[in-house]
Amino acid sequence: MARPVIHNDSLRQELLAVTAELVDREGPARVTVRDVASAAHTSTTAVYSLFGGKSQLLTAVVDDGFRSFRESQVAAAPAGLQGLGVAYRAWALEHRALYRLMFGGAMAAFVDCQPSPEAAGGAIKPLEEAVAAAQASGALLSAPVEMVAVAIWGQVHGLVSLELAQMGPPGADWGAAFNSALDAIARGWAA
Image (cartoon, rainbow, N blue to C red; front, side, top):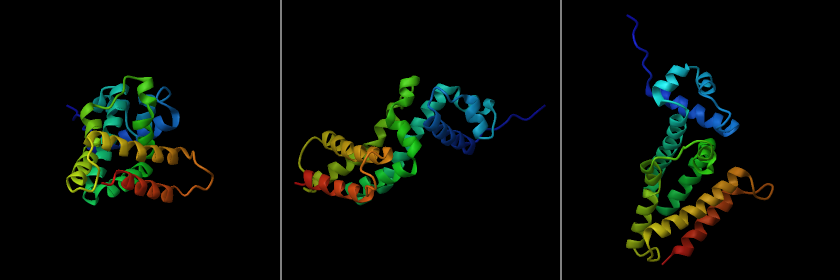
């Protein structure tokens, strides 16, 4: 009797990474399970075994992106709000395709592919905790934590998205612009 094929976490992670790159480059409508399997040097059976199908694979890519993003935010949390902002940009620059898929809406427009609430919702928790701590110490204005966190996230997200899309002036110093924006955000919310 033949031994069953074991599909391990390493293959799962490779399939997620390959899918993010292919979908970012080709668009979700053009990428097939066969394309993903071929790019990962495995079989379509492996993809179906691990994910169930294309829609589930795409959802897993987005969920895994939010998990990875959250982990980077948790690691940066001891450095406070400034550290979270720096980590946000660093993660986005390191995971460009994944960032665009998570926040660009291309996959949701193609298939019913929304991140799971626990994956997406957990991503903002380190920021909310940092806002609450800064407010408790008297460093930030008193306002609803969720509102402050979303406002800060929106400002950071907007600048990072512009950088990734290269929508600024030619030769823009994105690092300097980002650091200036972080300083302005901190001044704007200072108590």
